[in-house]
Image (cartoon, rainbow, N blue to C red; front, side, top):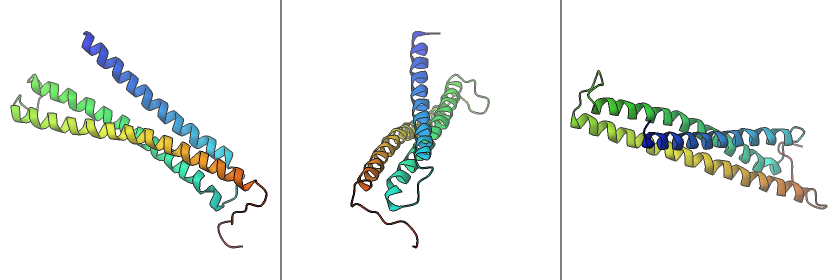
Length: 153
C-alpha cells in the first residue's frame, strides 16, 4: 500500500470513528433523557426536553445518512477509477463520461459533508435544550414558581 493510500485509509477511519462517536453520544443522550423523565408528567416545562430528544434523534438520523452516503461516494469513486482505466463493463473511458461521473461524485461528497455537519449541530443543539430544560426544572422547584399542565383540568 502506498503512503497516499495509507494516509487516505487513516483519514477515512478517523472520520468514521468520529461519526460513530457522535452516533453513540446521541443514542446515549436519548436514553438518558428517557430515564430522567420516566415518572414525569406532561407539562409545558418539558418542552425543552422534548426538543432536546428530537434534536438528538435528528443528529442520529444525520449520522446514519452520512455513513450511507460515504459508502455511496466510495462506490462512485471506485466506478470512476474503473472508467478512467477502461475496465468498467458498461462505460468506456470517454472524457464526457469521466466528467459526468466526477461531477456526480463531487456532489455526493458535498452532501455527505453536510450530513456530518448537521449531525454535530443537532447533537449540540440537543445539549443546549437539555440544559434549558434542567434550568427550567430547577426554577420550578423554587418556591412560588408554577407552570400549568397540558390538557384539561
